[in-house]
Amino acid sequence: MYNYLIVGAGIAGCVLAERLANFGNHILIVEKRYHVGGNCYDEYNQDGILIHRYGPHIFRTNSQEIWKYLSHFTDWYHYQHKVLAYVDGLKVPFPVNLDTLNILLNQQFSGAEMKNYLDKVRYEANVDVEQIKNGRDMAISLVGQELYDKLFKYYTRKQWNLWPEELAAEVTGRIPVRLNRDSRYFNDKYQGLPKHGYTKMFNRMLEHPNIHILLKTDYKQIIESISFDRMIYTGPIDYFFNYVHGRLPYRSLKFEYETLPVEYYQEVGTVNYPNDYDFTRITEYKHLTGQKHLWSTIAREYPATEGEPYYPVPTEVNQELYSKYESEAQKLKSVYFLGRLAEYRYYSMDQVISQVFRFLSNIT
Ligand code: FAD
Ligand code: UDP
Image 1: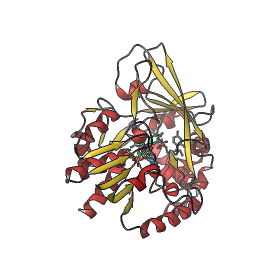
Image 2: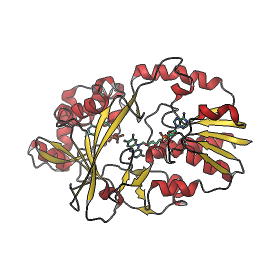
Image 3: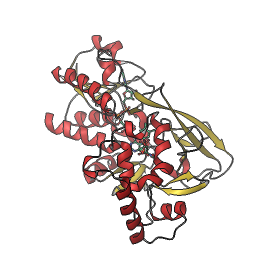
């Protein structure tokens, strides 16, 4: 008899299990993959290089509470992510900063001159900033038409198979613009990777004697044969309801790995390719993890329609469809839906933890 059945051992499932077990509950986690950690899972490949199996994950948060919480289970490699975008045959800093603008426009602007430039192109773009409704207007209102065309338009099309105007504003609104030379990808106060990897961190979280884990099992295979008081579901919400309202679209990725006999392949952790090739970006893992090795593994990311459900697709139509499932979910008394797939939200890791903490404070 378990107090909680948790479906999915991603970051949502692991944090839930650890917290609830520490409050004295008995937990069963059912996970259909062969490992814990969900999409944050990392492992050493056959060449001995630590890679993230489901795409590059850099932890970041502004919440001291969340950072401190994870620090109980790991030390940190204090990495701050850097990205270059390959545009017009040049590699420029991304997100847009003073150097990006000066290189792409062949200028020598100061920060104040960059501000004047942005004021001008934003005015010309004629976007009502109070009424931004989609990813195109958001990006143009940040950088103007010319940089939007070079950096955002075709990357977004490749990534989502949709034009930016078809997507919610939050998709491109995640990317900051800077009037200085700060070339970090994220602004958050706390940034880093677990020093010995995500998988080790999750394993430490789950070391509690009240937590039992069943891997390689779809919860629907065993649900009738176990007894529990409450269930927390972190998988895709449409699957839970047997797709009664139709399938929610998810964007997937295919990774092409290559290990090269060089210490480093590229200058920074990730290089984006908005306009060239079919892949969106190349990540070189050693930059992220700080691992020392004579060789280096890179991963090219090809967006795909079929495959693992990585990204909920933030469009109005999909949000409406999700709302139908959400109404079904609200009718259930002792089943709760949490995480990126169950809430159909484009959450980062810290946002998932924040949701979990909110949930826990409501039930305890
Ligand atoms: P998941 O990690 O998807 O976990 C859900 C788990 O449920 C999975 O393990 C799945 O196998 C299991 N499951 C599903 N259905 C069933 C079933 N029927 N029975 C049993 N088990 C089931 N966030 C950041 O903060 N920083 C980043 O740099 C970052 N980079 C990312 C890069 C990529 C390519 C992607 C796709 C996401 C990235 N994210 C990043 C987001 C991050 O991956 C998510 O916020 C986080 O992993 C979501 O955790 P979760 O537990 O909600 O879901
Ligand atoms: N984006 C873009 N050009 C880039 C990088 C990002 O147009 O070079 C847009 C694109 O729509 C992408 C979104 O910004 O989906 C968010 O980018 P982020 O790097 O945060 O995406 P993730 O790491 O979640 O794939």
